[in-house]
Image (cartoon, rainbow, N blue to C red; front, side, top):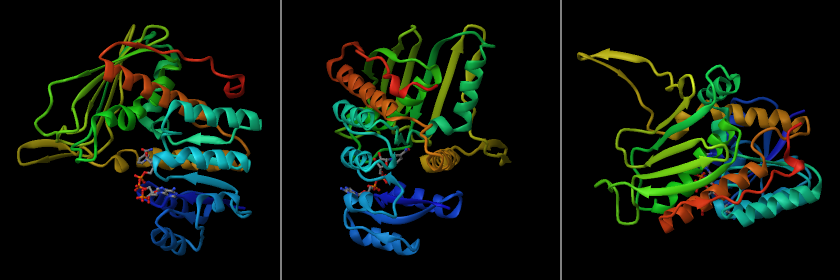
Length: 336
Ligand code: NAP
């Protein structure tokens, strides 16, 4: 029997996820859709022969909805995830888990109080084949311990709605999650510096920025965030180990020889760059949900990513190096 899913938020990524569930993935179907824009949600619901729900709360309470996907606007994530926990339903929420560390902590507390892990957060880079190869290489121990990481998060251009704070809070938050997972340890301190501002930016965006993190064991990480780099969407990660340097593989696009030049396309769209990772992420979430477990990024991981963004924002605004006051991971979230 297919897992019956209700989706709250029929915007860009919500429609994308519904399309992959209904056309590519196995073992699930969309039975209900809700969005503050009733018309767009009604149209998507009709397309998939699903029901339209006036509110997210109505969708979560519906008897035919076995699991919930939350792809609405960031500030709504907390209330829908708490409501799903209250109804004891599995919930996949797009990143961020919630907009503040305090709100993430409320979700963690509610999940622990309910006694069952139900929440997965959409940090899909953990499912990218390049990052999984990098993790495997580090874990093998063959190359010695990781000492330093050089990373970059580049977008071709950012419009007027993209602000200085978003480099940390919306873009680098993916790095915070995937690097913590890659190294399997928490962060210790953060510093954020502004580079010389590019002429391609606008009044409300200081671009690029350099984020420096250190981990509890002393690994030093630098992350360049440059969202007006002009040439494409490009994600880099180089791990300097004791005995080798390991790099995130480039996406495998064909090499083209033409007009006396060799060229390989660089993606401009994040959806294309991580398309396979989204597929794997949701297929494994469906499989795990059907088996009654959560094995992807947990509410605790979501809390840690938002907490890291909060510390980095403080570091950016103060110009100081800020120390993390990270709590021990609760027993509830420790993997057997
Ligand atoms: P989007 O196109 O703006 O879609 C969000 C939809 O949710 C919009 O239709 C929005 O309506 C609606 N909405 C707002 N408040 C709502 C409410 N109270 N109840 C139900 N629906 C509501 O945004 P998006 O790009 O799809 O992003 C959606 C979420 O996914 C965001 O949290 C974003 O951070 C996350 N995301 C993650 C990734 C990733 O790589 N993992 C990539 C992209 C996006 P309005 O337009 O009126 O606000």
